[in-house]
Image (cartoon, rainbow over all chains, first blue to last red; front, top):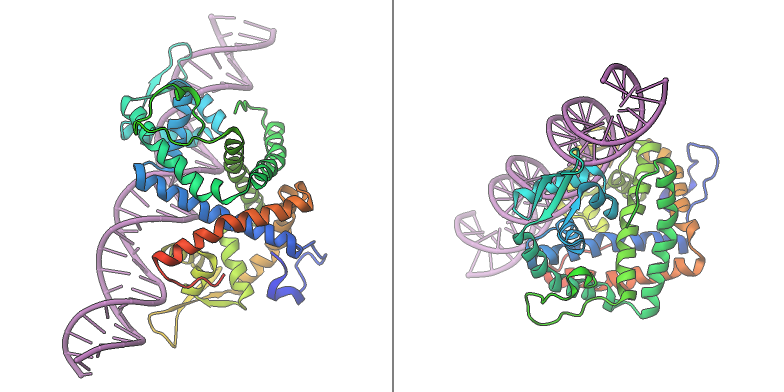
Length: 175
Length: 175
DNA sequence: CATGCCTGCATGACGCGTCAAGAAAACCAG
DNA sequence: CTGGTTTTCTTGACGCGTCATGCAGGCATG
């Protein structure tokens, strides 16, 4: 992302783009490495401890928060997932008996995703180990100040992205 | 991740796990949302601007830094990718004419990944827009202090993860 | 120089996520 | 209530990444 080896070469545009400064590059590379390694690690812990994937856990968790059932669109909206993604994933989870997909009474286009007993049991079994993993690999590595900084950074970055999404396609965003 | 609706219920372990405090939860949720949205957005920009995927860009960039060719293992090592991942991806990139995969002279088990002219052209065309996208969505949203904090957070989190990897399987890590 | 292990890489199967296309119900005009 | 639009969700194709497996070439040991 800094100019690297090809620094002497002229870029196709002919106009010099603003490459990243060393500090900027350090943050960018750090972010990408953290994304790669932390995600992989917590995901692997979760799979090993409970047999659930990260997305599995998220869906079960949301459904559990919502009292056990939720319209598919609300599920997608609250998780910032695409319709297609949630649809595909619910099919897979239903196949494994973690949820059911029942057609909705009030709106017959709709589908209600419902936690099965097995699904509820799975999330309750998985949660403690998962929290422990998140603590071990992220929370406990940071000072309280860093934790606060991370939250603020995330908010500063995601807010404009959420706003972009709303302008292009004014959709629901309750989450 | 905080106790949410099921807070009154007893967890299967019977022993209360240390759930996340509000500040911890804010950081954890923020991190996940940032990972989801920022990654998606930069990735979409890259695809729209240049037709390359994120992994495409990373591979081309590494090869370019290395002067145009690299042993597959070194490529994987420097990017922290699995052998399998790099292998699959090089097959796909070779199919599109971005790289070639030639068997290595000194070690006949080995493979050398080489940038084609087309591959070199692709990365040079893509780079300026990509930097601009990274600036727009990440760098420019943060103060210099936040940028430094992000880098430090990333380092604090990834260092132990890299160390873990080495203990379990003492491999190369030049990157 | 044979034995056996380790390394470097490829491959197949499978889960995951996106985009594009489509079906069906709801909504809304006139 | 008819015709068009919008919403809700599904589906198929395809790229991506992982894990497990396999295999050929290097390497070390006797």
